[in-house]
Image (cartoon, rainbow, N blue to C red; front, side, top):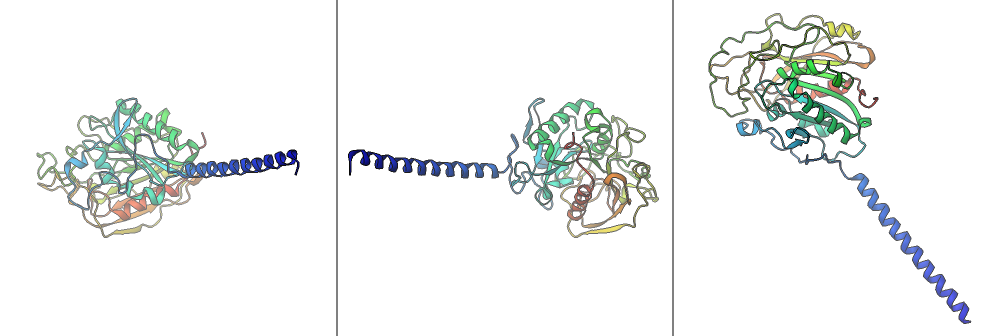
Length: 371
């Protein structure tokens, strides 16, 4: 073989070796990219753990746990909040985003365990932000903080991946939801509002008997208490609270009203809803009963001596009635949910919590994604 042929053959061997090496490197890079694309989404400063951090046990939740204000820092105000989401959440996955507001005198972690959405983030693909008011009463001074939380979460999810955005507020948190849903910032973002004993759009029931609430708090400070929570019932402002807005909002959104039966007078729920009429809904269906064999996680232990049934007794299993209005326009939802023999502060049981989640997910969403 001539020297030239030897050189040519050696060059061909080197060329094939380089091509194979490049191909192998390309496969490695491709696989690395695939793994990266499948890595779960992690929100800034919000590590995800299972079970969720600071989750209450089935009973006797320690008081130092329920008053916790969260581990996620809102960087502009430097205030903290909780953020719960599926630990296997993928980038680009569609989710429902919920902003959950505690009642007057309460705390973020009491709210998380009172309405335990964190138990359903995986199953229903929820992202739940639970903030805190430093004064324990929501006011306009908190609005920037709430805006910043919503902006941060949406930016990390991607607005195109927000299937729906809901407000869920207990008591004065519900009254605050009623106020902020009408503001320029929220009115074009909110797909629905869940009022947890926080007032009913379109006509509220009468107030039950809260006799005995004026006395000093009794009982232990722990066991799931919301310290200092005796401040009104969601049907009007308590001392020092801003009265809820009057009239119906101009913007349209789905609405669910949940309340304890003992919070209402003997007349119970009104037979109709001005809000349902505004959304073009038909008649309210016969109630569907939801049964719970397990109690909720928290209650207000500071108001058990003497007990005030309308305010709330010890957690216990129970039943709830779900009443939906039919045929609301544009896929919207209007519904009432009454927890039988319950008051204002017993934590929601698992079956009724899940039913409320299902109701939220059944309604039309997409306001943020379509902006």
